[in-house]
Amino acid sequence: MTTNESQLPFIPFTRPHFDQETIDAVAQVLRSGWVTSGPKLAEFEATLSEYFGGRPVRCFANGTATMKIALQVAGIGPGDEVITTPISWVATSNVILSVGATPVFVDIDPVTRNIDLNKVSAAITPKTRAIMPVYLAGLPVDMDHLYSLAKEHNLRVIEDAAQAFGSQWQGQKIGSIGDLVSFSFQANKNLSTVEGGCLVLNNADEAKLAEKLRLQGLTRQGMDGMDVDVLGGKDNLTDVNAVIGLHQLKQLPAFQARRSALARQYFDVIRSELKTAGLEQLKLELPVENFSDSNWHMFQVVLPLDQLNVDRAQIMTELKDQGIGTGVHYPIITGFTLYQKLGYQTQSTPNAQRIGRSILTLPLFPGMADEDIGRIARTLIAILKNHLKN
Ligand SMILES: *Cc1c(COP(=O)(O)O)cnc(C)c1O
Image: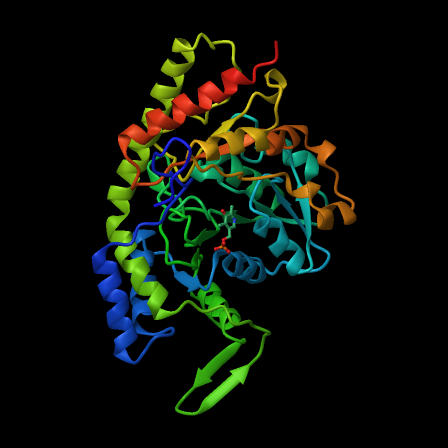
């Protein structure tokens, strides 16, 4: 176990949890003689389909491949524009570029930190083909608003729900409604297959195309027939990963309950600690307090950098020295060199510019202890107090 100056155990910002049953199931697959895509994948896809109310589901090697294939299934390519958010994992816009389309970045709502749907209409051009929203930290956008925009402008929706497995919209699971919905099962996500992803599709034709695209464009006929009629990649999910997913799915309700309980404690403890420290004027921005829709993939605060004499990196360093791991999810995508070279400007999305500089992910994962929340909140607030501008 890593220790630190305070000699308390180090708390990472997240940590996946695989129980003994999962480990045993993986060993069984490894011994079975069939380790790549096979019966466990088929079982995982069927279970996911049931979970999403019977919609077709196909799995892929990772969330990035899942989103790229979603764009291909929607027929998006060169000359097309896709509207998305500048505050996401760069995979979101990278996949738009990788199919030859153009990402169009719309600013975020500073409260939800998701794409501001009120600003989408102004970004639509005759080339716009799709909207790709991201549910940051697992908080969905207003789905009624999203799909009314899509309907009005005749656009496809590719939901980057990478962080939103288990999230809901008005009592319905994200993925059980909507157009193409993409999830990631990467190690940090609420449900993990180590690496992996799944796409919820609309019909059997789309599912068939997704199957081809994940394996070289291949279709088989009879005993020995093979054909390739589209260019596909090598993006299949293995049975080793799929069996992990099957076991994670069983534990999801318990994971979810624990995440929500920990998030509630963050709100309570941060507010009471701010009061105790006499820091009610500190503009530390907390997440939307949504316990019906969000899966609490992350608990993120926005630092009041205007009120501080240090930057985010210094706050992170001091937290790390106290044994607390944090993360940045995410810096603004349009600030990256590749995107700057393509002509994007961070100033055109001022909310994203500010939040990309000052957002901070605090530890949140099911294996955390209740006491960890108090320790993290007290340490963060003491550090902020220490660095107030006078
Ligand atoms: C994790 C993530 C992805 C990509 O998933 P991978 O499985 O890592 O390829 C895409 N978008 C968002 C918002 C994510 O958090």
